[in-house]
Length: 71
Image (tube, rainbow, N blue to C red):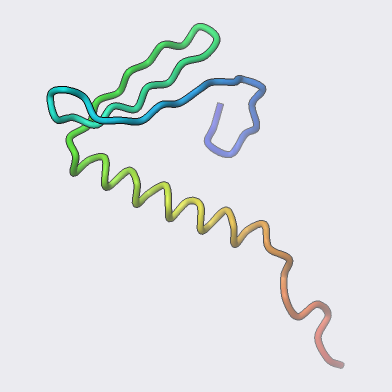
């Protein structure tokens, strides 16, 4: 499976701080139980990557402006 392929797999995600000062991303689904812990700085980098990907996805789904143009 690649980053640009659709999937029928469903999973839940929870994000929060741990008692040890880490940021945990917890993914749970069919056959998946995956806690991922990150230093706060790493979590901020991930958040920036998520925002950038959301902007690119939003831009890709917008209708193109201009249409056919003038002749």
